[in-house]
Image (cartoon, rainbow, N blue to C red; front, side, top):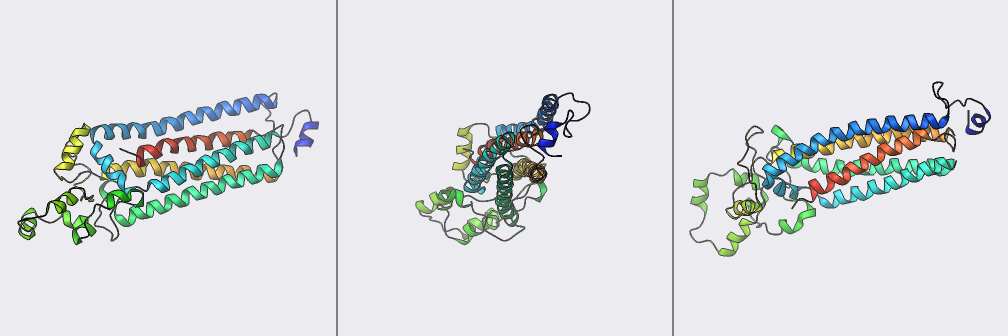
Length: 305
């Protein structure tokens, strides 16, 4: 039954039998959605708390490891989700005005934005896989061949790397015994070469998820550690949090795309209009939350200083 037929009946087909008016049904549905979104916020709050605890106790890990994330791709994904929020809000307004064609176009565009976001995220995940930058015990930069240097989003740090075999294979260089390094290093080293090596970013081998390096709690301590050219340990902690937060968010993006696809299918059948647009409005609320969570994830993971 379309909107016009429903308008002429005393009890429209879209109105559940336990609601007296469409307005009552709409308010009840919106309250239920807000309760559901509150549980989603609690779910992600646990991950944000874990991020805060590890970030406070091991800032050197986060400051170091974020150089291996592509901030350009992260920024593009942020713009994509913001645009999708705009089209979703516009779709809700189109449903309220009974603009069926515009509603369908806007919902389809929102789904396309979701595909774009997931496509970019796939590119990022593929880079981490080939570089061996995986969570927990799976973190092993030696597991795959590839470029372990910082991604293009941090090209300024990569410029300081010397063009030697040790720079091209930082993991193998880090695994060399100190005695062997002393035997193969010339007695007199130019000062410029030493300064360049101090700024070289290297992916250290993992010491296991159970082992934690001594906490560095101040910025001065971080700089002091960098000045002594010590290798940053426990980098797998950062990538564990990175994959947990972005992976869970990606699952929510897929869920939101599925819901919007279902709403699009119903919109094409003409089920929504000025009298009934509750599913469109509730799907929009969910999508806005997904976008909002990413707006927090992007600076916390990609723009750490």
